[in-house]
Length: 365
Ligand SMILES: *Cc1c(COP(=O)(O)O)cnc(C)c1O
Image (tube, rainbow, N blue to C red; front, side, top):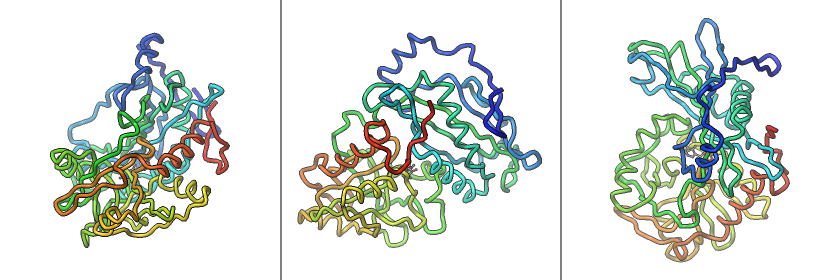
């Protein structure tokens, strides 16, 4: 039994944990989201007992009745965060309180139970501490955490679930895009939108991803890497990628990113880069940016760079944009200077190479 103030959890050690030599071999080249640690955290919720049954247990299949709500009505939300190895051998999370808050907001939007923020953060801390040997120490690598929650009531009636399962798993990851520096080619989706006003665009839910995959498939057929979505009302304003926010860099050195008006996921990377950009003395605007303007500015040279950002990929430069009505290259089509500086500033803090001036780190050991 472990304990953290009022919170206590049961521990069941994995008797079949991966042997150290095998683990070290896996950590050499983990890819993204394919290798997993030995344990997971689970917590149950029911209307009658509240949050209960907090456990660290061997990572294993969840046994669910086929009539469980999640299978039928996509009652699922998730988070994505990383644990970073520090130069002294310790480890840290990055702004886990922000993930906890967003998790609550996502739950609220989907009518799910809202997990107390300290329970969410303590669960993530406990998992990383327990599986600490899985945090890679190679350059740019980290331990990706995937906390998620499903509606687990067994019922086909369409109503909010009275039971939930929270689970957190962990996966050592190298950098998200192979080759690192090569710039993305985006497909500007004109057939499909990701989120509409009043919808779930600002909630981190699996359903948003399911709804974006046809557009992603279309983009891949067109030879692109990722999709950039436009607003659902005017099909004019650039919103974000399927799983990353977007920034533009202009010739006067200013940065711009679309505002959070409810259809865009409030990225923690986005928020951190706004702060770091301002720390660097750059002007950062949260203002809408039109697709036609984007092409015009890319062609005139007023736009110098564009990049996507998120926890998994950190900062991913955008080189080209294609669509039925658009086709243009940004700058020389390669990774830009400001994107590189912002990525370095952020990862230097995350990996403990630069001072943590905004108190973003949550040191684990
Ligand atoms: C998770 C996510 C992001 C990025 O959020 P971070 O907190 O920076 O990882 C952006 N857009 C969507 C749709 C997402 O799901």
